[in-house]
Amino acid sequence: QLVESGGGLVEPGGSLTLSCAAPGFILEDYAIGWFRQAPGKEREGVSCISMISGSTYYKESVKGRFTISIDNAENTVYLQMNSLRPEDTAVYYCAADSLLKSHVEAMCLTGSPLGSWGQGTRVTVSS
Image (tube, rainbow, N blue to C red; front, top):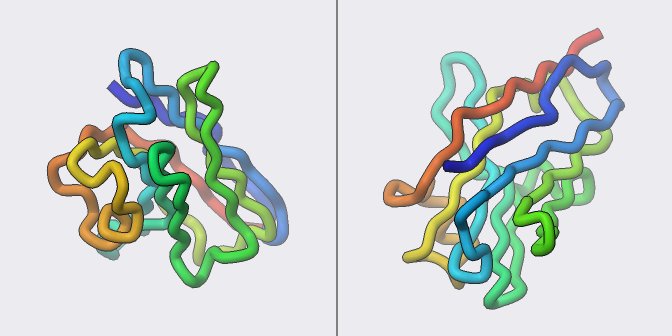
């Protein structure tokens, strides 16, 4: 079971760090991704990371603003979000996918249909 936390209300230009705790997962056996779903829109991949390949993928609109990272000791994946915009408002989910563990772009673009998912954390960017 993945557990997301760290969401909240932030003003445009602000920052948040989301956490995805993964108890029981051996993170090097998975690709881990952050996805988001805004009201009335489809879920989309934001950023994905693979420990075994060392690769990361970012959605174009978040490049330079968001950073994904893994703390292996804490078995937690983070998404540092800076320079937040109103269009970043969404429920953010993390997912773990063993089948795509070396294919971060595929994981983010396909939505990880066979992955394990958390319940989500809401991010609202508004003044």
